[in-house]
Length: 161
Image 1 (cartoon, rainbow, N blue to C red):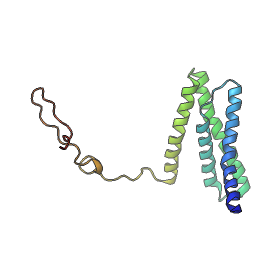
Image 2: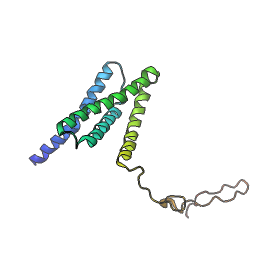
Image 3: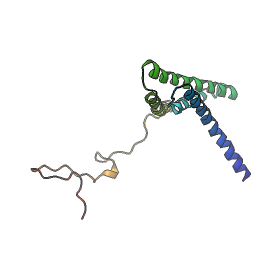
Image 4: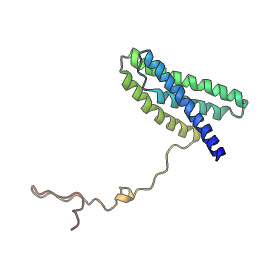
């Protein structure tokens, strides 16, 4: 029981510390008058850049050096994305909220695409189509009947009686 509580506490701290650092960054940006809605996207960009760096350098560099360099690379990646956000907000005159949400929507998609490209999986597996429609919908739709006058025709099966 004690080991379980100790393990839970360790895992809680591992997840809690990065989120608290991002929360502090949000507080500082709010105090300076900037509404930064892109914090999650920045965190994701930094995490991806750090993980990508570690993936390539774990065999070459010693563990602590690689980890510290990965943290530095993650900070640089987050700063680069933040510069794009600030350029869109300040130089182009865009809204901070829209630009921040764009970063939050772009970063998860970009990291998934880049991770699949790096690993070599370019497309997720799909099920083969059967007759033009995915198999759960086969037989649900009927061919469109010819129209006669102003009668309303069903494009789907009529309800069962």
